[in-house]
Structures are given as structure tokens and as C-alpha cells.
Length: 218
Image 1 (cartoon, rainbow, N blue to C red):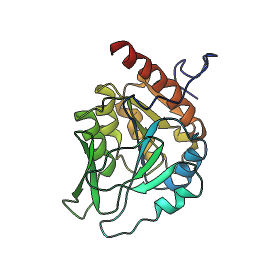
Image 2: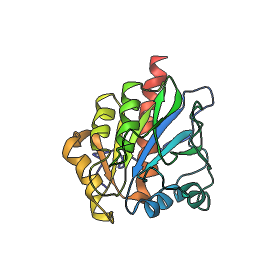
Image 3: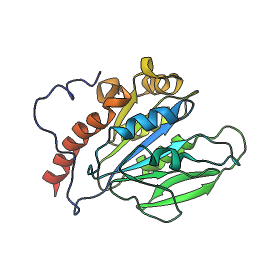
Image 4: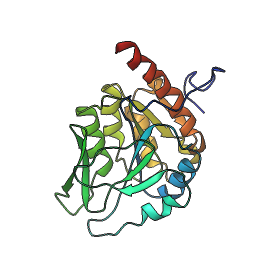
């Protein structure tokens, strides 16, 4: 695990936040080989984190997705496909639908049709919106295995907007191009390179710090 000293503290980490606090949004991007990585990640996520997970994967415009069914079998969290106009929910996995770009605008999910039928940047599109319209709570970009470089520019924008960036260790990725591309752009001293199994703990540590900062500002 390479996360500066984030994971080395012996202090207890609280991963649950009260219902009165803003929703903390975790955007997770994956491509080739991402199904197995996502199952491993959510297998290690406890039920009451207070986080709202947004899962974005690459699909062809007319390709159907069964990712919700795949994830439901290995997690205690509720899993559903994103609907236009709904809001992120705590302790929930929101899965981007096929054939649509997803953005977060004024706290709501907004669905947009693909502009073209060639390579789409589903992950970047959502991360750009997350950085442009930061939620009231904490937010993070998590990039898992995949080919090409979707998510790299988006992760940079999230980091510059004050969000957390976590990247699957390329050495553990079946297809390392996406995490490697992120690491070429973001500021490494403010990023976390970690195994998939340890991502939930890394998120809890860093967002726990973020939550502390939010509370001091209220």
C-alpha cells in the first residue's frame, strides 16, 4: 500500500456518518477486468459507511448491462441502476446505465445520450461534473483496472477540486492501463495507490479526515 502515512495510523477510524451530514460520493471507474475488481472491492465494504458509490464502466451504446445483478450477489449494500433526476443515496451502489453519460448536477443524477458511437469517456464525463459541481460532502475518484486512459483527466479535475483520488495498484491489475494513466497526471503525494481489497479502508481513513474538516467549518 502506498498512501503516504494514511494507512499507518493506529488511531481508530469511524466509517459511519450521521444522517444529518451531507452524502459522501465515491465515483468508481473500471473497464476491462473491472467486474472481478468491483466484486472484490464491494465484498470488503461494510454496510454502514454512509458513502454513496457511483459505478461507471465502459459499454457499447447498445450493449446491455447486467452489472447490478453481478454486484448484488457479493455485497450487503443496495444496488440499483441510475435513474434521471434521482439523488445519491447513502450505503448504496448506483450503477450507470448503458448508452448514457451520467453527470451530477445540483445534487441530482442527470443522464445524457452518447454524442457519438465511437470510444466514450463515461468515467471522465462523470468526474468532470463531480469536480465542477462538488457535493456538500466529501468526494473521491477511484480508478480500477481497464484499458486506455478514461478517468485520468477526470481524476486530475477531482483532485484539483479538493477530492480524494485512489488508484488500484497497477501491479495487481489485470489491465493496468487506466490506473497507470491516472498516475501520470495526478499529484502523487496527494493520491493513494492501493490493492483493491484495501480500498474501503483507504477511503474510510481519508474521508474520515475530510468529514472532520467539514465539521470544523459548520
